[in-house]
Length: 128
Image 1: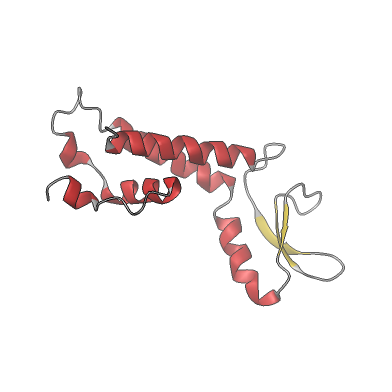
Image 2 (image 1 turned 90 degrees about the vertical axis):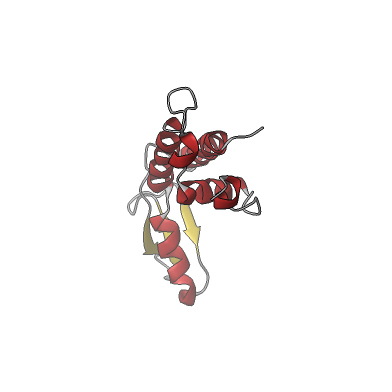
């Protein structure tokens, strides 16, 4: 049976893998900008010599770019670390009352990452 700690660790591993794959030449911070010619909005990893460039063809979608830049690889790696740390606190051997330690928000984030957000509510699982 998959435990909440397992879900947290699985989500952390998946997120860390995807964040690492989106990182080129150690660039984990993304920023917004515009192309030189058409001035199309973009998300990039280096304004001078971008290796990651995500272009939005409509200026009205610049809010999407700001969101992508905010949640670039650096944020993904930080969230993965948080999920791993949260999972570590749920070690059943070290914490006999681990159910009381489950962070429902962390588990909700993990389930979104894993695509299992339709799982029963955390409070239901824990009998609260």
